[in-house]
Image (cartoon, rainbow, N blue to C red; front, side, top):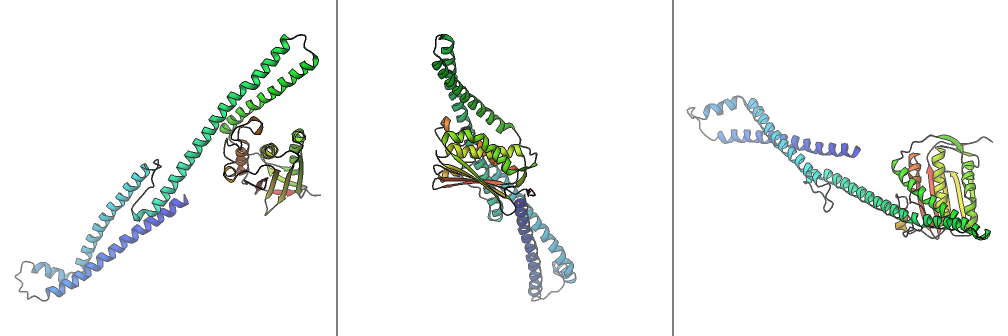
Length: 369
């Protein structure tokens, strides 16, 4: 909106300056013509019987009135000229607006409208970029839905198969029964994960995030999340270390949604971290805002993928393997929640270390000791 007002001010200022300059030129031309005409006519001998003599005599007696009348006529002609020119500007802009949907070429306007041309090309670029990103996100979502729908069949078939064996083989040994039940439970849990991913896609598209903020202890919130991950840490033999300065730091936020942010980041660090590695969580106050970092040791993320890591339905594993990620919404949701809190989230990856940083410019408190 500010850009539009600034461009309008520039165009109108230039337009009226040209009109004023044209008016001054018109006045100067009239004065020059008047004096030149008087000098030229004075070279002739007049007897008063000439047909044009009464008009020239009247002009000589009413020079100021004549100049004023001619100046007003000139201004009227200049006004008509610039009014037509303004209509041509409007027509050019309207025709350019019809080209906003054409991506092949840039919009070109006359030099007087160069600011409008630049602004329209910028808007055109943003529109086509947004459309392209939306199409890519929609395509990734469609691919993901197809993948999930296809992948639902595998665990479901296994569950039905092993349960059928348990029902039909009445003389099965306890060891084999336990094996079949374990496999059925494992496949059922995988089936639940896939169904949850379907719900995640629906919630992300239909849910409008509204914040309900309260003041909570950051340390207790993180300890609770880390505690829930202990079985997964043990499975990959990963150690999780936490460092908060000061330890009694309180933050004001929507706890449920902020827990989801930290859960998604920690889950991402766990999924893509090496076995026998360490995940480090660091939080501190930096320039009146909370800065929280989650660092893991894992394969370095290429720059081209790192730039898209917060997009909807984007996953690092292009093969969409079941064991290395979900619907590709975790980081996109985390980004939206953090931005709703007025903060920002970023990631960097180098030398087999990936760091996610959350900055929250919000009210930060420390409990009194």
